[in-house]
Each structure stands twice: as structure tokens, then as C-alpha cells.
Amino acid sequence: MDTVFFNRGGFCLFAHIIDKITVKQHIFILIIWSAINVVYQYLVGSFVLHNTYAEYVYDSFFEIVWIILIVSLVIRADLSVMGKYIEILSPLTMGVFIIHPLINTVCVHFITIDSVLISFAYFILITVLSFAATYILSKLPFSKYLLKI
Image (cartoon, rainbow, N blue to C red; front, side):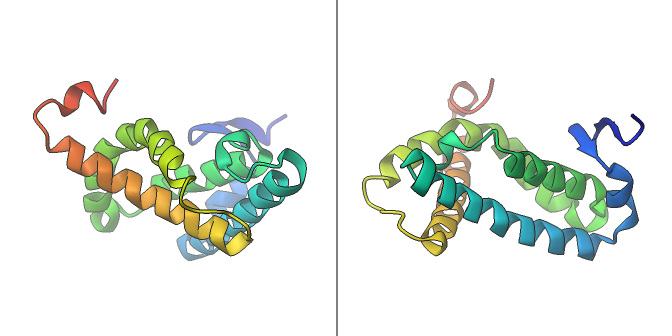
């Protein structure tokens, strides 16, 4: 099957479509898909799992497509524009991966997710707090033992 192949960090169906759309269209699709993903996670969490926290929907179709859209956008990015942001954020990603469950564990005691809007705001909050905590910890002399594998 020639429309299924390993490309851009994962199996990507119809990758030739991604190559034909403009970067602005790609960003627009990513924003819309992000909203769809949050709504899906909220609905499944609320009505199927009875738990509105994202840890149980990481392997959904919507999440996988969302990750493919993000990775393919980063690959397409104009490095003269995005290079400095990638250079700042990329060393922090493993730390964010390690720290975000801890931040999530603390935040669930203070925030009740009872709507799609709060779910989206919660996602943004956890992401920003995870990057901020990782950045702060990365400045400590022993951070190589905490934030890297």
C-alpha cells in the first residue's frame, strides 16, 4: 500500500496531502484538530471513562493524528524563523515529558474539569507550567540527573 509509509516520526496516511498544503493551511488544520482532540478527550473522559484527565486517552486516533500534524509542521518549519524557538524548546521536551505527570497530579486537586473550555485551558496550563518548571530546573547544577535520560 503506497499511501501508508513511515514518514515524519510515525506512520502517516496520505502524507502526500500534507506536502501539498501550505504551512498556513497546516497551522489552521493543526489548530482545528487540537480543538477536536480536546473535545474528544473531554467527552470520552466524562462519559466513557468517568475521568477527565488526559492520561487515559494518549493512544487515541485523534492524539496520534495530532502528534503527526505537530511533527510534520516542525519538519516543514522555516528554520530561519522557527530555529531559535526550536533551539530553546527542544532541550526542554524530555523534562516536560518527565515533569508533566507531577504537575498534573498537583493541579487535579485544585481544578475541576467540567467543560470542554476548562479542559482546553487545563491542557494549556499544564503545558506552560511543565515548560516553566523544566526551564527553571534546567538552570540548576544537578539538572542533568533530573530532566534527561
